[in-house]
Length: 242
Image (cartoon, rainbow, N blue to C red; front, side):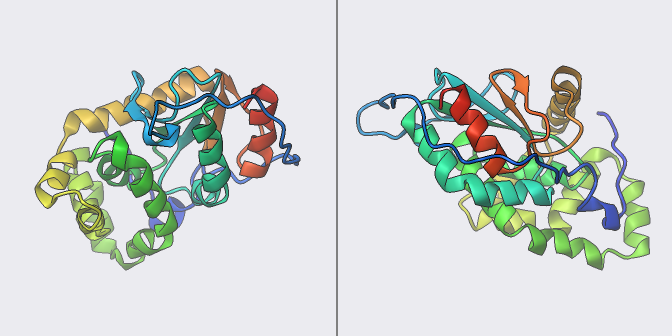
């Protein structure tokens, strides 16, 4: 298992979390809707992609949006809040699919992402959204880490560290309150292969899409430069045929 460095608590909220966006308008034109299977909505259709991302929507949508994001990233949390209504509407229209790929900024992303994914793709999106909404609360618990805690954490391997951080941040209780049994949650944060898979996903994002921070968006295989806000991303989706 590959070992990542534990950042200091002062850097945990800032490291590689993008905040720059070019100005853009909120164009409203788009393609014709694509009907979902009878009695369903496209936003209810979720799956795990071959790359390990969590996909929401029509898998054959003409506009494929990928977000490389981190649950510890404040700008990702802002994007989640600003985009959730309109992006879900585009997904329900059937013209856009939305895939979230974990990009690890620091060790705190590991237990958060593992537990968000623990119930599968069907529960991932609501749990991730709620982790973003409460991000300041659970990340704020790092402020109580003592110097001795920091030293002890730095001496742990990734699996030990993931389990200790999940406990210290209250994340097992968080997902348990949202329908994930405690035993299942503990099994998820003890999954060494899943940790390795997230490291590999992060490395692949850097290698294939030149991801340097979060959020980074990819539309139909093309990385969108200077785009980290919904106001800037939305017109690009519309231009692509959303």
